[in-house]
Length: 355
Image (cartoon, rainbow, N blue to C red; front, side):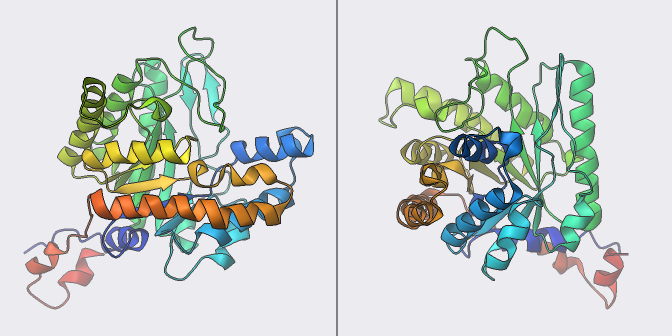
C-alpha cells in the first residue's frame, strides 16, 4: 500500500507561523525600498546612498518592539536577518523573503527574480519556517510576461515541495508604464501605486490563476481587492455589501483551492487596516501579514531611534493588540491535517514516504 505524501515539513512550518489558536498574526520586516526612501529623506540623501548600518538599525528596533507579539516575523536576508535574528523570540516563527525588490520593468509588464546568491534551499538551511515570494502580476500583461511570472512561481513552488517548506505567495497588481489610467505616485504612507477601478477583477483573476495546484502555494498573502483607504463602513448598506462581495469572491477562490490566506497592509493607516481585516475575516481570511500599518508612523522620528522605539512600543503594540483581538474573535483558524498518518500500517512506511 502506497502511503500518501505527508509533507510534514510544510505542516510544521505553517504551524510555527501560526498562533496556538491557528491564526496567522505576522509582521513584515522585509521592506527595502520604502525604508530606504524614508531613511534617505531623513538623512537628506538618495535612497541608493542609505547605509547598511542605518537599514540594520531600523530593522533591529522593529524586531525588538514587535517580535514578541507576532506569531511570525518576515525577514529579508540582506538586512533584517543579520539585524534581527538574534532578537527573534524562541516562540516566533521565521519567514524569509526570496524575491529581489529590483524587478525588471518592461513595456509588457514586470519580471521578478530572486535575490542574488539566495534560494529556497538556503532559506531552509538558515532555519526558515516558510519562503515568501512576491510576484508582480497582471492577467492582462503581455503573454510572454505572464508566462515568465507563472514559470517563476511554478519553479519556486517545485523547489519548496522538494525542500518540504511552505510557500507564502504574495500577489500584487501594478500599473503599466505610462498608463493614463493609473497613478505611479506612492501614497502618504509609502503605499504601492494606486490602481484604477479595474483592480478588483485583476486581483481576483491573479488569485484564481495561482490557486491552481501546479504552483504549490501553501499560504496566500493578498492585497485588498479595493483600496484599503476607501473601504466603506460595514453598516449593512449597499456600499458595504458591494465591497464585501469582492472580498467574498476572493475568499471563495482560496476556500475552493484549500489554501489559507492572509492580508497585507499596503501602507494604510492602522484604523483603515482594521477595517480591511473586518472585511477579510467576514470572507474567511486566516490572519494578516502587516508591515507599515504597524510601524510606519513611528519611524517618522528617524534618526532618533529611541523615539522610534518608544512609539513602536506604545502605538505599534497597541495596533497589533487590536488586530490580534479582532483575529481571535473573527478570524478563520487553520490547523494542520495529519490524517495521512491513519494510512500507515507498518514500520518504515513513514520513512519511505520521504525517500
